[in-house]
Image (tube, rainbow, N blue to C red; front, side, top):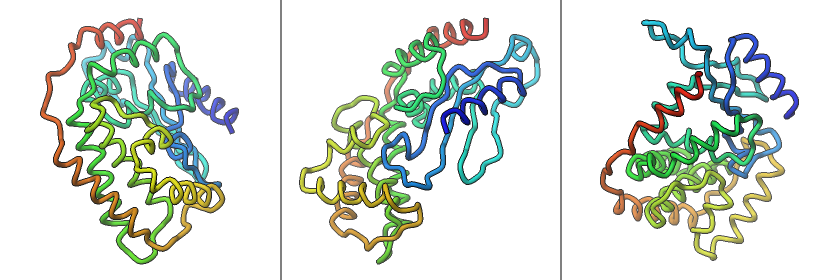
Length: 248
């Protein structure tokens, strides 16, 4: 599958006359709780040739391939990505930590990662992850039977929010690192659910786990009481320097 993805990325570079600076896995395969039929969520950052940046008109700044049951591939143009990076866009910060990297310009990826700490907004990150966790808990985990994967789609963001509240830093992307914040009493049930999910499809249903629901709900309330205050943003000089270097 990796070879197929790399061929798709090469094709994108040729078809759109761009250079891909970074490409990674962004979904459940990178989070660490994929099912056998989980698709591949490939995300990338690309740069155009200089002429693109000399036009007075705004131009399309995303590339999206048709989605099928196996592959979901799309990317952001560099200037768009850096603008979102400056706003502490949580998905982008996750991409840059993905354990599955398909392609990277190491100079670019090391440079942008070095800027993450000073541009990360704990407040924006907290709001993002709390909104995700709360939305899944309320809409997907309230019935007697629930989709197994939705527990991880709520646990991961609420643990990311808790990471921000307790450790005051950029939360890791992968569930294995985040689950260290959970009480040991949940180790058994989480291990069991992970083992089941690894062998069933995405639609697999289980009975609602009341203790897990209570933990997620309590963690949401814990984090809501600890939403960080707005903080000053990092300077733009280094981001602009990276932008100019990447399009040169």
